Each structure stands twice: as structure tokens, then as C-alpha cells.
Image (cartoon, rainbow, N blue to C red; front, side, top):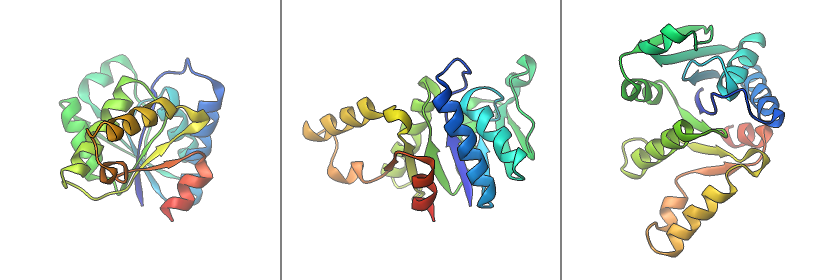
Length: 175
């Protein structure tokens, strides 16, 4: 299975997130899955990729060419360069069987909402999993519930993704 992971690109985050990213990468490799991600060498993204590679996993990085200049990219089993961030997201979508959203900032949230919106519009039917590590996404989930309560979303919309609280739970769900 090719698992697209979205997550933080910052190293300046609590160690619990980096620890869980390393666990995610290791578990992914042990289960013979392939990581598809944005190619970065920092934060949750980099930690998961390095862990997957260190444990014999396959890692596909996808990044726009302008990231090459700033030495932001990790070594990967395969690497694809795009011209734009939009092309990057589309290629990540096309190369993946499932999407896992780890804790992150603006980019991670944007990627989650885009892939969720595409699923709502029936442009794909791939699983989407929110990794609610350390209860990071509690306020986001509450906001989505509020949107449902106020009739901006339906219950069907909230069924378009799953929420897991641990790495083990993610992989049990995917199996």
C-alpha cells in the first residue's frame, strides 16, 4: 500500500510528535508499505521518512523544484520534482492509496482540506485518516462537528475520514 502522509515540516515541535513520526515510519516499513510525502527533511515529514528508510522501507518524495535551492529535501528511494505546489499535491494524490494526516501547520491543514474536498466531490474514494496524536486535532474536529450542527456539513461529510489516536490504531484500521 502507498500511504501519503501529510505533516509538519518544523523541527521546533514537541518531541512526542517526532517520536510518533519515527514510529509511523518504522511501522510503515515493517508492514512493507511505501511512504509518499512532500520530500522534506525536517519535522514530522523528515522524521517519518528517515525512520522508514532506516527500517528498509520505500519512500517516494515529491517536491517542487524551488525546494532544491534551499536544501530542504530528504534522500528518498525515489524523488519526483514538479513545477508548482499544485502539481506536487496532484502527483502525491495519484501515487497514493490512502492519506494520513499527522499534526502540522497551514500546509498540512490545506492538504487535508483539499483531499477531503476532493473525496466529497467524488474525485477519489481513498481512505483519509487523521492521526490525532496528543489530541492535536481536537479543536479541528470540534469545528467540523460545529459545522455539522449548524448544517454547513452533513453527517455523511464527517464519515469521509477516520480519526485514530495512535500509530498502532492507524495501521490496524488500514489493514
